Length: 213
Image 1 (tube, rainbow, N blue to C red):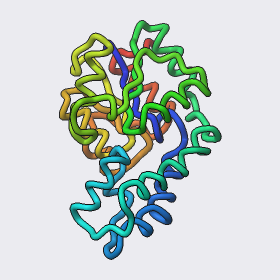
Image 2 (image 1 turned 90 degrees about the vertical axis):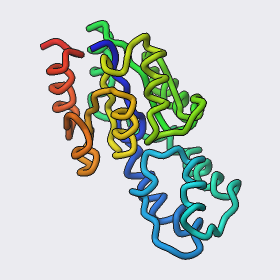
Image 3 (image 1 turned 90 degrees about the horizontal axis):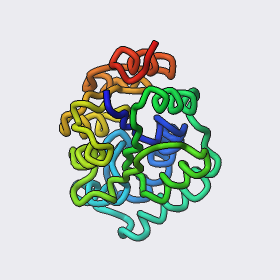
């Protein structure tokens, strides 16, 4: 195993429940005139692409700028207060000790990812946002294809750790083995492996050769 490619929200930082609640209770009701979209429909999708996704299906109550402002205002404080997921720092150190490269592959804007990396002083080899890629975001494979190239590996020799169905779809379409982290039922069904918690994630990565016993 040459590299581990981590999603960020819900995998590295404990923000997923915040985003689910904010989208369900604030963003989607404000954005859509009539209809009942759910946060599950847009989970794992870059928020800039989310507007187009919704506008194709619903009458929108907000223009694009207003919609994006809802996300920016939520993120302004979130990434300065969110906690690192349990065990991640030790896992990162163990991967480096084993010679495995590490990338963050996220639908979040690069500045949000960099805020997390800088705040927690994370030693990662590659930081890649879907906004950095000349192509569509997750669930399209483009960002995972690019991530593998940037860690000097082919997707088949990487493993992607994702908590959302769209993230698992993106990595699978790129050819990378996948681990569904955190227990989302649809992600688990789509992924090659399941890791409901940090201990299970270490066990799976050990079985795949990214860590040693």
